[in-house]
Image (cartoon, rainbow, N blue to C red; front, side, top):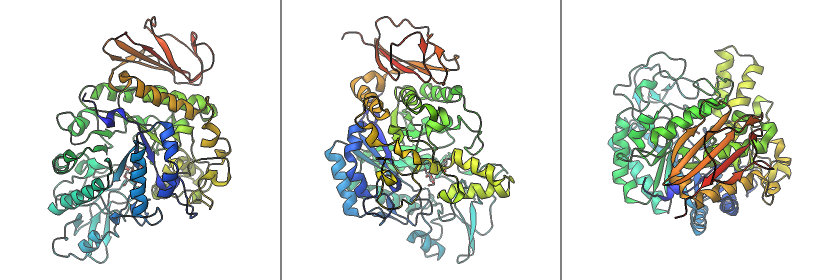
Length: 545
Ligand code: TEU
């Protein structure tokens, strides 16, 4: 694999709305991110991924963009944005923007022109004289009648997020202009939102009736998408030292290589979702009991599936997913859980993505009222569960508690003060009451904290090439409660061993550890013949060069 900064780096994802509010409106802003650059640098992250900060009516918290070249006033000004880019670069930290071009806001001037059928704009979006049966990711119909144009338009997400028609020649040109605008400002790359949905089947035919996403066979990984992405790579990405990561639900390693294969390079890497189904049936709302094997199998599949041919992303959290400690470990053993999950994941092959708050072990929201949830997806799914599945309020609330995206969107917990040091005003969304003990200030100087452990991991990644470029092989794969694997690079070997459960297990791996050094362990005391609950160890054997 060719060496690259985006392969050796570590990405820290910021959801600006919930990161740090400096102007007292209860909403995070760009100056808050500028203020916290030292925190990002201290963690050891080398790339920041910023969820959308463009002008938006916030129907989907910024993923509904009304002007790609303007900053949402709640977040600040373009001058703030330029200062953020400069100050990140001054610390050797690169910036990746969120590129949302499958759809725009219905308040974007493009959509207004298309509604009015202005010449050249009539089919800038997907319109139909008749309704289609597709359903949306947000639990509603995906086609809505527009009273002014008197036709139906497609929106795979909310009604205020109409899908662009990428077959219209002007769409690619407009997106090229947006990319070049931000690259000229010094941006180092793009996280490409739902990028494998851009292509829609000719004629937009009705889909096979499904419980989830009727019509998806007509747009998920449609072959057209590769033409669009190759064009963008040739016209833009290949002309800059810039990095692209695609968000691509519904891919397997074989399909993924059509996007990220060394021979394709449409994208540099992608987010797949197989391991996000470790605690649910197909979609996150239908919860199933989590078992470590449900995580081990998909992650191992992707390590082997892309090895030597493509590049993985390593993530367990983002702004759309509930917190990993609650889902894949035990909030009652927060330190052990957070550090075991981090060890299990971040010594694999791929670029690590750390979501704000993950580095201090933040956990799911502690909401009890429906009104505390703010996410459009959560409210739509609540209504659907009550109306269609006849769920009781209690059962529907249990669903939100487990899977709402708001679990990841409570304000970043900086200290034990009111509103966790996020804001001086009442935040747009409730602060987790556990901020009294779970916060940056309580951990920053504690060598035994989750934050300190993350620093150690990132330090080891910087020190040893084997962690970035070594190959991957499972160890003791059939031991259900053990998650162990080996990385090899030349004659060097790194062995990671994790007890993925809250019960002690015997330390039994068929590998001779003679000549290995224990370079990391999340448990106190001697590394003996028993792995304590959620105990994780990393052994390294380096042959003198
Ligand atoms: O998410 C795509 C998507 O499918 C999400 O709905 C996600 O898979 C789901 O919530 C997980 O259960 C992207 C953005 O990350 C998300 O925030 C946006 O709402 C969505 O696209 C539309 O832009």
